[in-house]
Image 1 (cartoon, one colour):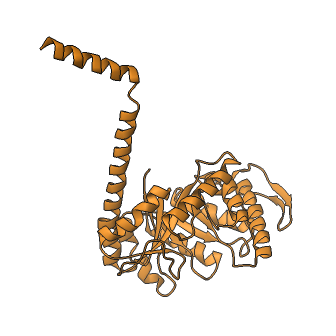
Image 2 (image 1 turned 90 degrees about the vertical axis):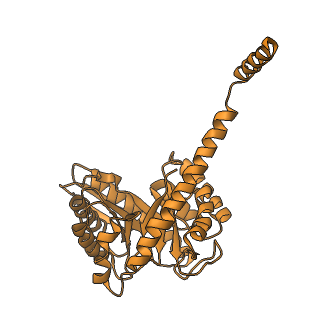
Image 3 (image 1 turned 60 degrees about the horizontal axis):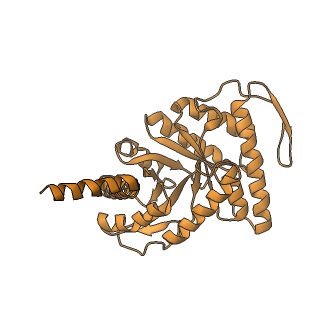
Length: 312
């Protein structure tokens, strides 16, 4: 299993400073950048457009809140981003905090929102829709993006309702922080739910991580809903590796705001973690090969060995 890294920037206070680091980020281990300011979907889209303009290879994961923008406007803006980036856009679906009863309604609204996005991204004729949350009449996007309706969707949430939504729609499921065992259990639950839609193996799992200067126990949640790690590169790898074994294939890293910290993580921690994962995979392949030697071949080798000893 390959391991990916996504950069979560701290951009609220100094957007120009963040934009100045884009050239560095494209030369590091980070294949994706999350754009999710605490302001609005439209501001997120505007910032994503600026990142797309300044980059050539990194993917941009833009946060979109269904309560903040209409489906037609969202579909159109995201399609423009997809076209401008030549297919480097993903969408991170977010919702406001709500009570349990409101949470169910929020996820239902998100479901209707996503269904409409996919229809608008793929239909070759106008569509009309009358639903609980949205009404469309002859809505149509004449220009489609290179990814069409296959723009990757990120979702989050550990409730049963959220899992149902992820199982049906998510390409990437964002996990809640916890111990490796807890994370493994949640991954299993999401995969089981996704299996109901024939998608058990079509979801990647991303774990938010906050990298700091001092070590912390693996599994401890930070103030930004992330597993907190710190210390030396080896200590960080030791903290992260159990999550790879649990099924995590992407780490969304926050807390790396300076040039030195971004470079240090990318050129020290990421290679060590990938190498360790590759070694583990190689060992598993060897063990599997040894375990699958046919019994008849093993008996044949024993017979040859006995014959050789008798000849001497």
